[in-house]
Image (cartoon, rainbow, N blue to C red):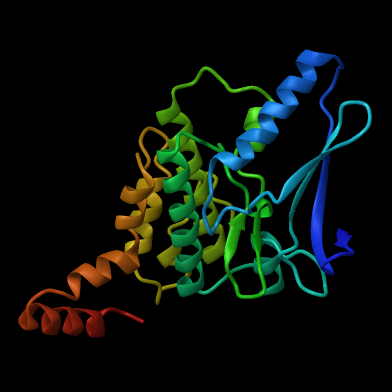
Length: 240
């Protein structure tokens, strides 16, 4: 944490130093830092500035998003709530992460797999991915096609969603979420199955967002009155 004496604000200072020395290494570090400013989105933690350090290191300054107890990550929030979030809370988290990822991918920037420890939560409950795309830039961009990197990133977000709802890892063998929680909307099972398919997965953030149970319910809610009544009867007849 860093305190700005002029405006009495609190920030987070991240210090980075790559292995080796020389102009080329410093240039690679500078390029990675510059990439942080390539995407601006409400759910991507902004970079407020950079400061050159000693021996080729650099400080990256970001806002302090935590509270009086410290920084809050999506992982620590779930742990504090007993290991899982409610479906509406998980749905909101998925929407925010997918919105951020979609804008970043359209701008030609990819983060790669996202972990819940990299997602910060501010005092208003808004999510932000920390240092989006920086690790991938710093370690060198792989030769893999951008579409594959994007699918891996989206798959990691679906994994986060599964863990948030069930409290379990999304690794195989995976239990259907509705088997663990019978009252859960079974559309989640299909969303997890599609998004975690090792041979497929979602191709875009828009596709993943459109398949979310909340989005599908919204579309179905626009149907005819007769269809609405039929759905309500079907929901009432489902076993508890």
